[in-house]
Image (cartoon, rainbow, N blue to C red; front, side, top):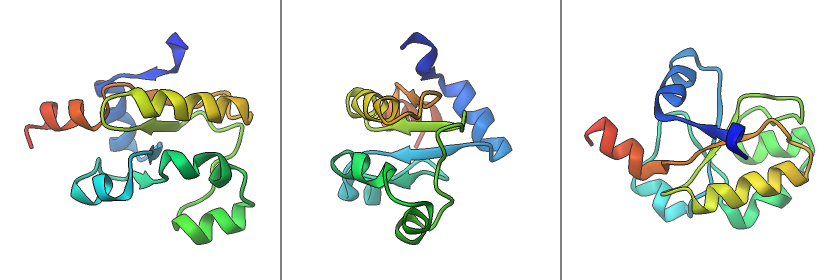
Length: 115
């Protein structure tokens, strides 16, 4: 899964261009405590079910456009890369073969952003 990793600088570029579907797979309480801008909270425990929702239901539940299997801008993140690695595996098994993850997670984001 080497090509599946997004670096901090790649993430910053994607966020700046708004060309990203960033999914935070941490628990809601972690997400509420702080998040990367533009990230949508889809907890890991709900991810498989959520990615199989119809586009209409996904958009109702998360208030963003549903990802498609052809999208190359899907990025998962968690706190330190463990849960996002599992999320990536789930997404790939469901056919989202171009999905990637920000391995450094929220921990690296906070460290580099100085927050």
